[in-house]
Amino acid sequence: MAPSLARAFRRRWWMAGTAVLENLFFSAVLLGWGSLLLMLKREGVYASLCPAENSSNATGDAPRPWPSCDRQDEMLNLGFTVGSFLLSATTLPLGILMDRFGPRPLRMLGSACFAASCALMAAATQDPEALSPLIFLALSLNGFAGICLTFTSLTLPNMFGNLRSTFMALMIGSYASSAITFPGIKLIYEAGVPFVAIMSTWSGLACLIFLNCALNWPSEPFPAPEELDYRRKVKLAGLALDHKVSGDRFYSHISAVGQRLSQKAPSLDQGADAFLAPQDGRGASRSQPEKAVPFRKSLGSPIFLWSLLTMGLTQLRIIFYMAAMNKMLEFLVTRGQEHKTGELQQRVAETVGFYSSVFGAMQLLCLVTCPLIGYVMDWRIKDCVDAPAGGPANGDARSGAVPKSTRPRYCKTQKLTNAISAFTLTNLLLVGFGVTCLTDSLPLQFVTFVLHTMVRGFFHSACGGLYAAVFPSGHFGTLTGLQSLSSAVFALLQQPLFMAMVGPLHGEPFWVNLGLLLCSLLGFLLPAYLFCYRARVQRELAAPGPVGLGAPPRWPPDVHTQGPQADSQPAEPPWAAARGARAELLQDALRAVSPP
Image (cartoon, rainbow, N blue to C red; front, top):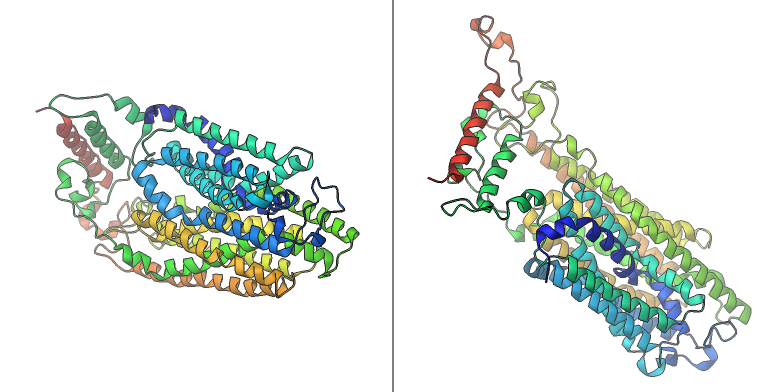
């Protein structure tokens, strides 16, 4: 039996804490592919593709002297490509399903798929020559399960009101940091614990996610804080007034009145209609609905198209490095030598294992970088005012807090400014990451790991903030899903790039990294276009409106413009009339919910 929203609200701290842990250890664990690849190769998965004389660990201390070769790497990398594609591409259909059925069934499905993926990986290592193809199904289920757990957890911050952004950053940070899981499991594996035992235990832990979701997650979706106050809703859920006036109706009227009374007093120049909210009682019939923006207009906008290119290239750069990191490190050690001695093979194994573990540990930096880019996206937003809508734009200017010459800071232009800063910073880090990849220095790869982690934590948050600032809220989910699908399609190109690197280029990553670095420069076109778009928006907002947006009225009024009676009889301040209008508004709302 699913709990109610009221009970879920009381358990919100438990749900948020467990969601962070579940994201950290069960969501995007596939991004720690470098460590999983080493374990699968040591277990002999697809080792049958290699001739026996190409064994790379026959002289080491590995539990099984399975051979290793480039064909094995290509086949396993293909499985990673499919899994990582599902990790991003299924965002759009999942969003549609979650809007229809809520997060509870999808989270339960994701935990079941994760348990099945671990069981399949354990089964594939029991007879690698016959069961190696199970790895494709296992990695596909792992990627699908990861995005199910991640996507559903992003609805939880709605229960925390003003702390929503903080918990959203924690959810995204724990998702991005989940790449540390496989490096941690690799340490347990190297300590002597069998791979089958590790995967079986992990599969059992995934069943606990299913149980936790069944006991604590409600069947209803979590409304946003601006749509519902949980505590008031819980208290009024059982309230019913006479004459078929429900508690929900009473709550909606009182909430509407409270929201209007909490706002600053409108200017008298706007007339009495400024005191009426579209949702308040009798004023609803007189309100005019805003002209809806067609979805095709948002879909074909230059900002969305440029974002598809930028995000796709960034995703390709990030995923390719994850897939080819071990081969790149191996090339730095061998310098392209085709015939490796036993000593060199041992050195390669130790170096690659050490650096892959360090790379996995650095994924915890995402818990820091995700809130950092969130701070950039929220910079000075609280000091802004809404765009003008037929009246003075700045409430502080009306009360005389600022001089007439002060230009108001609008939310939309500030969000665009923050998006420009976020994308510029992300692209600079991406270019720096590409430069360090081109440098043949093993110690410098620690810097590469840090830059990779920062870029991976930045670019999704920057894109989400841009879409929220530019496009209607009703288009946000669909546009985000389309962007994730487009990025996943871009990331499929990493498989032919990997095959080119290990094939015709004989393992040398220089030319592939150079081409990706040059493509990364195209990412600066998006902030450049946003800069031009922001200038156009600023001109539109600065254009004089029907009441003179460029010179909002001040209080107290200038005595030289009030006539000879200004000295003897002071004008009535705006808030005096506003007080009376608020009282009338409250009376109208109470009459609407009172029985006749």
